[in-house]
Length: 409
Ligand code: CS2
Ligand code: MG
Image (tube, rainbow, N blue to C red; front, side):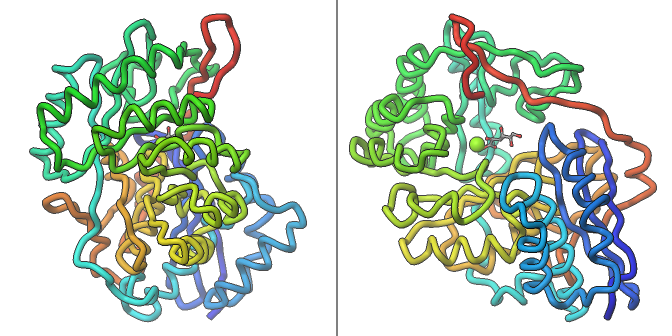
């Protein structure tokens, strides 16, 4: 079998997506997701201008060899753009191999290790009553695990709060990247947040009891000692995890957090390779790997990363916001079903226009996701529909502290 074409499809139904479609001489096609929120065109160009010319004529079945070729022959390694481009190729080739084998991808990854994939949903509120309503809505939808994000008194706009207004009129939690000419500036105050958040989790536990798995995303905004302080303050509320509690470029920073709290830690959605995790995993400084298949070099690289993590009893918590396309989500679900060290899967529903462009066969039933039994990934792209939604520039917001200092968003 030979690759005869590779097309980069940029579409913007409810938000921008970059999809790679690889076609073989036997008419089998494979899809890969290369969406990098707010920097989509950089991956599209990396693929179209530099990678596609290298794919035509190759044997699509040689996935590992193609991965190593794209990673090493580029000379310039790692980084979000490179690894998203490699991921798009890798996932498309796994899609082709599974279709050629006539089986759902998870079967090629070793078969099912469970009957369903526990998903967590995003509940949020500007105040406690609104948050409780959001949690109840998610429980009614079947979610058995809930991420809790709230507004903070004294701060105008905080990551992850659905109901707060966004500059382009879209639901904020649905898509943080806004279709504005420049990134929107937001405000932040960590001390106000640290005072407020424990009171929120106390209220949620009082209302919903001790069993419900609760998660929270610190979204990279605390220093290590502030993260340690929050982790400790949240211990009475028995969180499933505290995510991205501090920027982790300096992996050793987590030693200080670990020293002070037993609240489980999840990190990695902005990471791109196993090297970003080396100290975190080897020193048992995290409990969940948060990478997305789309941002970490695809299924080939993610499986190796999760196998490394398994040696340390560290589990998966794959990143699944709406800026991971249905193709990237499906790839995550096949991996989730097959690996042993599965922890939990993030699940934000895509919008109605996205469902017109991507026909998905994965299901969400009673709190559990399943990739389906279609051969391959189980996602097809409607190119005519995709063409109806041309790319629209969009930026993620950024933060400034009260004194004007730029801060992590
Ligand atoms: C977030 C993401 O889902 C999460 O855990 O951290 O929504 C993140 O803000 C976006 O992926 C950024 O594009
Ligand atoms: Mg996050």
